[in-house]
Length: 158
Image (cartoon, rainbow, N blue to C red; front, top):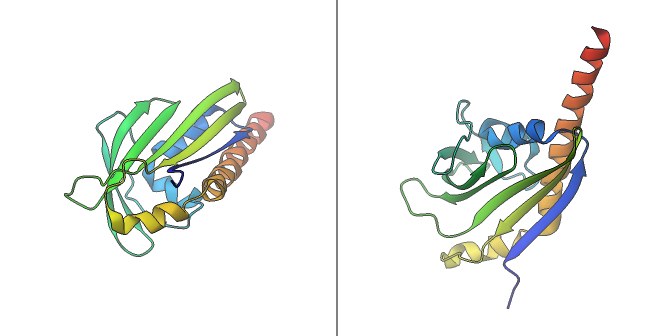
């Protein structure tokens, strides 16, 4: 049987709360999406708790409602996407952040399609690999680390 969970991890030289802000604000997600699948999300949808829902448009113009199923502020968030007004078909995106110290965080990104029920989505699910997930983490790292260095530069100048 095909493995139905793909995961990737990387240490990022930024504080967990800074990285989490880039993940928990859907309007930021197209900036770091390694699948090049996300087009836009309206501002003001910051995820704050389990049960939240945010709306995203993908690059093919399809709108997805993302239902937050796991949430620990600054540490973990996971959501299940669905077509508007429909029940999520069972695949899940998860981000976990483990602070290593004040300026370093281990970030793990997981795509889990163990419970995927929509047969039409299986080929796309199978094509989502650890390499795709790592691309998102790498882009996220570039953003977070550049913000951290900008913050340090402005602190040094004061």
